[in-house]
Image 1 (cartoon, helix red, strand yellow):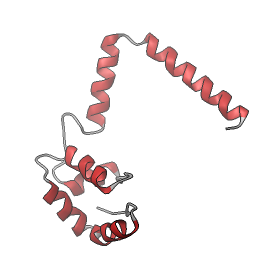
Image 2 (cartoon, rainbow, N blue to C red):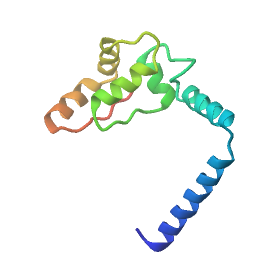
Image 3 (tube, helix red, strand yellow):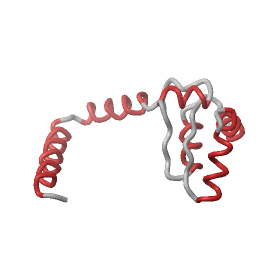
Image 4 (tube, rainbow, N blue to C red):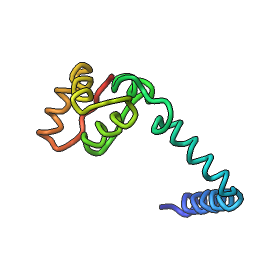
Length: 110
């Protein structure tokens, strides 16, 4: 990493550290709750895996099971079967086959 990039990173870390110290424990709890809500991990969830993908615009993961779990966590009453069906309906079955052959994650649209 170049020196200017390292300096910028150090400044950013210092600013974030100072902001964290300024936040009270109540603020931290509220921030955590807002982050969970914004990520749809608390409160409102999507009606289907496809809706979860549309809401997020995309899903990225190093491994397909992680992407599927992410969708399941953001969908009301979701099952692995429902996620697989949504992926298949969006053309992901070919991507899953490529992923299985190549050991990489394919890209899928909702």
